[in-house]
Image: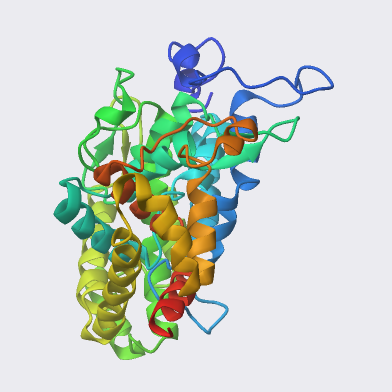
Length: 401
């Protein structure tokens, strides 16, 4: 028997009923009940058919707008997390369909420009209406309230994912500092999260994705930094001597950490690395922060990101005038036709700005755009869904007037 097989999130397990719970019952296909797929399988296919998932291919992982096709994007990252999660979950005897669904959806809440863009949106949100923006929470907000799929009658509805997958999204923070990860017992309201990494995931499968997230990026970021000439071979070779027997190469690092994790994990101790492997991971993180994430070479990009995000936000924010806001946005078409038309069209999905809209959409209304705070949140949500290229083209339209 595999180590974790008796604790997998499967039918009959103690967490099963809550794990497959949805906010609403999924609509029934016109041709009858879907018996071919499990609940988590349905979540997986709903996500990969969503626009939010497709946009990940044009969102920054670490390096912005790479011309090199082999530099990692956010989509490649989530696919790598899925692969690593599958290996761990399969070896330990957990539910692979659940890890797959969590892994593929865990970064749907990421903004353009990666973590730098996330930090900038958070600065605006705190300054304007006193709340923080962080991508794990935004991911749940996206799948619950923003991302839309047509039902069998062509009506647009929210994704309505299971509790276990939604929990995996908000609980996935890849900054793993614990030596042993164990799932929490209670099924909390996910909107009670106040900060990233506040609670452990609800399932063992969620814990697997959380730790796979770290394994996925730690070597790949070094590989990409080398491809961008941010890291020299001699720097990597020098650091290789510090971590001794583990050669710094992405697939080698993945294999080392996955094998070590699987060999050292247990129900009693949780998902854990050996002391030696855990120390190596901490050293690698420190190396990445010093040589990559805090490098002065990426500072010009960061300054540019800040200008772009703030300009787009305040261009839309300045059109607020209570009940006249939509009229003002439509008048903006004279100057910025694409921004005006596309923002109003997007807003119509989530706010009562046109009576005819309510006949075409079945998702809930989430903004009262006559309220300034709601309107500002709508702008943050709109920007957070953009790809790098899209927000840059929006900015260029603004400054080209």
